[in-house]
Every structure is written in structure tokens, then in C-alpha cells.
Image (tube, rainbow, N blue to C red; front, side, top):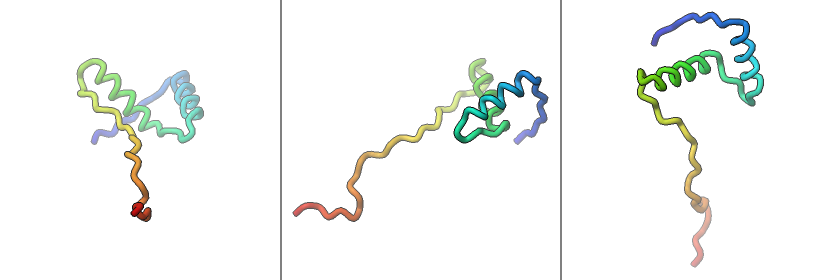
Length: 70
């Protein structure tokens, strides 16, 4: 894994801070930078886009302690 140091302009820093402040759980600057860079490179064909991770509801099942009708 490569580590890098970046410098943000005041305008970009303010925009990132505003975005983080609007989130219920603010993402880290590292997470924001990684997602933005992945999207940028994928749009230009340099990175194979990953499928977005999704949490899907499971099929409804009766609880394990339910006794089936007789």
C-alpha cells in the first residue's frame, strides 16, 4: 500500500469539511480521497470499477424458536 501526503486548497478544505459535517457519521479524509481517486481513475479507464457494496435485506424467515403449526 502506498502512502501519500496531499495539500488541499482552502476552498477544497472548506468543501470537504462541509461535506463531512453534513454526514451522520463523517468519513475520514483518507476514505474520501480513496473513493474520489478510484472514481476518477475508473471514469478514465485506468481502474476496473468495483461493484458498489450494498447491504441487502435477507429473505423473511420465521424465528428459530417458532414452533411450526401442527
